[in-house]
Amino acid sequence: MATETTTENTEKKEIKKVEPKFRFTKKDKKLMRSFPYQFYRAIILGLHFWKLVRKVH
Amino acid sequence: MAKIVIVGAGFAGHYGALILQDALKGKGDHEITVVNRHPKFTYIPSLVWVGVGQMQAEETQFELRPVYDKLGINLVVGSVTEVYPDDQKVKVVTKNGNEKELEYDYLMIATGPYLNFEATEGLGPEKGHTYSICSPPHATETAAKYLELVSRLEKGDRAKIVIGMGHGTATCQGAAFEYICNVHNDLVDRGLRDKVDILWLSNEPKLGDFGIDGLEAKRGSLIYTSEMMAEALFYDYGIDYEIQSHVTKIDEKKIYTENLDGEFKEFEYDFAMLIPPFKAQPIKYIDKDGNDITSELCNPAGFLKVDANYGKPYEELDGPDWPKTYQNPKYKNIFAAGIAFAPPGPLSKPSKSPNGTLIGPAPPRTGYTAELSGKAAALNIAEMVQGNEPIHTASMAETPGLCVASMKNNVATGMAATIAIYPVARNYAEYPEYGRDLDMCAAEIGMAGAWFKLALHYAFIYKLQAKPFWKLIP
Image (cartoon, rainbow over all chains, first blue to last red; front, side, top):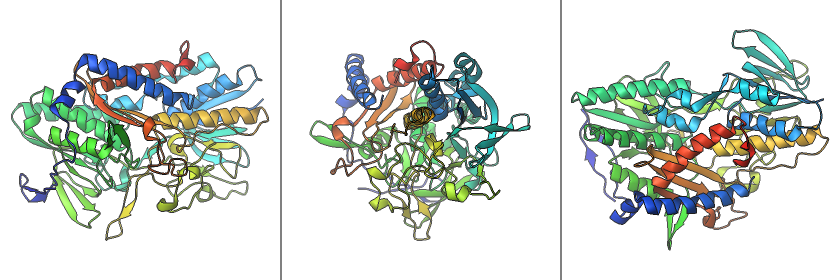
């Protein structure tokens, strides 16, 4: 876990820049924008939402 | 004939009025009156787009009166200032300053929050230096100031943007998260992102907490958390963050904070959108002898107590302590829903700085959660009108939280985080390991979320206007 000091401001500020434990891979990012995959996910997530909504309606 | 007064016409109050009218249809000549400060309903989740100038405020609103005229519901535009629970009447100050009294047999308080900008010196657009997206006028003003900043950037200026929470106990981190992502992506699209430093400033105990103690979801064999999602996203977006922070003061150039380590920091800014803490709308409760009993009926923030177990420390609070029917324990004909009910405690772990400053988000109970509590309260009133006991429940420890956090509003290139949790409040009595059913939880970023977010905007505005087949939309 790295912490570095940024000095862009007129006075020093410590802003944590932490290397994340998890990163989105190139494949993840591609899938996030892939129309066919997102269409498939929309159906899956839509069904998931519907299942949850049916618990209360 | 029963007289029912609903105070507030947001998600809880307006939806409650529709449900109540439907439940009592054909069951006697009952009178439903909604008192609201504005003549319009606002679909608050879309104000994030208003705040970046991508939608007009009017597109998030519709007039309540035509809807209520169609359904036979009365609308009074004004504010309830006093409730007389023994005499069963409320005092209303109408928009033109006149006072009137409304009698009731059953009362639902669903006022939404008072935006408490006064809690932090220099916070807010009216008396301070920061902006907000919590109401249509605020979001419209925020967009104007943001676009002013954009034109300065186009001329070659650099800028520092701070987005987050304006107080150590503020809630609705999700809205600020949506705004910071939309601002980032808007600046990327304009080719200006490299001229801006963006900082997320929040009171969350950990990144991705969102005031709901974060979330976990299964991703193959991995338990994927909202902290991991937010960290990875901010890393990719180049957004710095300061969490566990309470904003103590804001002046024209700097935001002053104190964090959980007791450190005092200052951040320069050119544009800041900070969500204020919430407290209840100022309503006094007066008993039959003229005594002010507000402190007896409400918690210190003024939210009305309902059927929750109050007074437990955070560590002992569990699912069964959350309210179920939203009925006031003293006055059984009064209910509170949405933001207006007093929660038994926070969802996120509260902490104090070495200087004794409380830093921890209040529990969010907006949007879908508000709607569910409004529905339960309305159905319970309908039961009582018919001589039955309130049996309808919508405990936050038994109902799902559904949230689509917009990151960019575009059908072809948009992005949003689709989040589902079940239940909202961790319920270790039911789910000992995580307090939630991870098979029912989901967290996913993608274009599908952007479609959902846009679809929900139109679906909810359609449903809440009680248009044909509105009841089919959950």
